[in-house]
Amino acid sequence: MTTTPNIIVMNHPTREQLEKIYDILDECFSVGRAFFQERLDLDTSYDPDTTWFATVDGEIASNVQIFPLSIRVGQAILKTGAMGSVGTDPNYRGMGLAHKILNAQTIYMKRTDYDISLLLASKHAFYEKAGWRLIPETAYAIEKPVSFEQQSSDEIIPFEPRYLDDIRFIYEQFSQNRTYTVVRSETYWNDLLSWPEWKKADCLLLRRNEKIVAYGIIEKKNTEQVFMNELLYLNEAEDGVEAMFHALCQLRPNAKQILAMLPEDHKLYSYYQEHQAQSMQINMAMWKMINLSSTFHKLQPELEDRLSRSNIIANQDLHIALQCNEDCIYLDYKHKQLSVSDASNHENVYTSIVVDERDLMTYIMFGYNEAGAAKDSAEHANILQALFPKQQAVFYLTDKF
Image 1 (tube, rainbow, N blue to C red):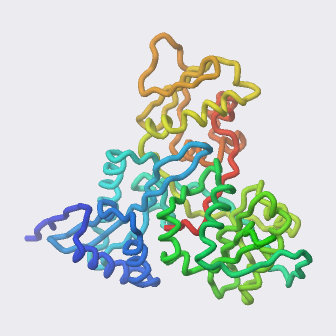
Image 2: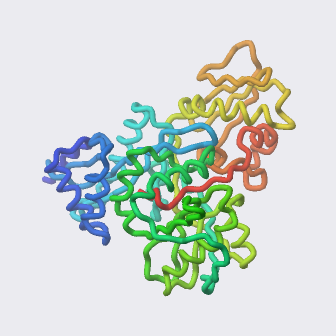
């Protein structure tokens, strides 16, 4: 008679249990044990509560890590559970262990004030079953340019740790109010230099009159296609972006194409278009709404500002019941002020707008696009466009987890 295995899902591993988790990840991924161990051991803000694992008859068999990120949506900041390091011992696959962990983590994230969740994956159907939804993004590729003769007196120099505050300042200036960017705390910056993703890239700086005014990071790969992880600059350095880009490209002699995720307001975007950029759909980012109420309460100042600046909506009174899955949030906009509530005001007549979770996450991160939106949202296009205008959104690959 076959006995049913005893499966337990928990978090907060002991050091001995964490070592076993690293062993499983070492077996599952070619990057090796050190990649995962360094990411946690060298994170001074690491909380063991974010490491989840499943045991089968007392043996650790599967694990999923939550990397807490703060992601901007305009001026708002959403607490985001970034899911990574998903691995199951080959001897225990097919038992649904990872899904059991993901379901437990969803409950945990709701209880601990997370708003949304993001994971980067290629096995989309696997995570769709657990409630995450794929939202394709666009990367651009151009042929690697030939050598560039620098005309100005700008200097392009390698990054050194003493310049950390300089690139942090540039990052904050460039990313301020930019949707999809990660809020990098001082601790985050200091730890970043020890993390595997940083070691897998090269960084150059643009110095002008003894001031660091731009920096770029390119992945360290000896392949034909190489990603530009980020290239950020102060407004005064827009004219130096092309030289910086060329210098980074020359670090990869075997590359034939340079790929980048570029918002349209980036100086490099126009350069890419001038050089016949090829757009490529990237099917990697998957999203899940964790808490509709907390998300919209945090978005309230941003949404109020958007509505008050709308040519069509600004001076109207709006009462919206926005429903996603089983949850509903109520938006009352009057005299250019917006209130967000979990319950309706019985004095108001509400316009009901039902949105699919994938669509809603798309609107929040990238903006409402009537051409690509669901047909049943067309009658509310003006409202949705005002609430969720197009965002110059970008996720810097340095922040991969």
